[in-house]
Image (cartoon, rainbow, N blue to C red; front, side):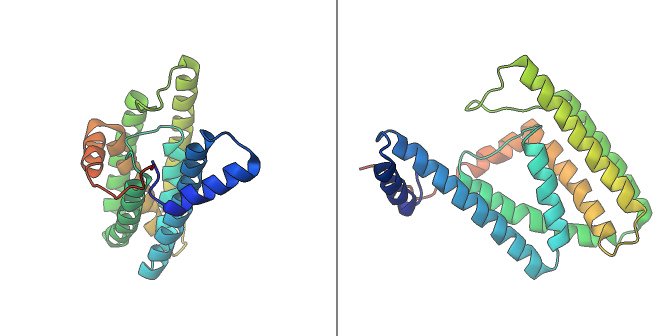
Length: 212
């Protein structure tokens, strides 16, 4: 279902010009809309992060989440608009929290890192990959492959956390805490609490452009 009239119009134009079957129009409209929303959402989130002074932290969050979402999976909204709202809200807030938490000292960050990495590893080993009813993982081989990739992403993230602890870079502590909070967020989204949250988010209604 399309939320943008322009995506339907553009899809109709492209379908006609390319000589595609009429049934392809709705698929093309959805693809156009997903691309526009994803790019716009990412750019807006990064712009907001820059205005708040937490661009490095938000960028690190988005990179790690992108890698985990394509390997471990997890709860997500049925609407790209709702996903966009979650992204714009959560990751800048996470980076702002990281700025505060980074000032609580190395001992606190070390303890938080240990807890987050332990929870993250447990969630990935037990739960990942988490599929959805609309896109179930049927192949056992693919499931094993995604779990292995999830563990690889986790290992890289954990290594980054350790390396940043030794770094003198001005943003090292902030990004380190952002990675820690992102691992906690991923762990949350892999479990039932994350799915319950997305169910609540899915109750938010947007006006749709219905087919005539």
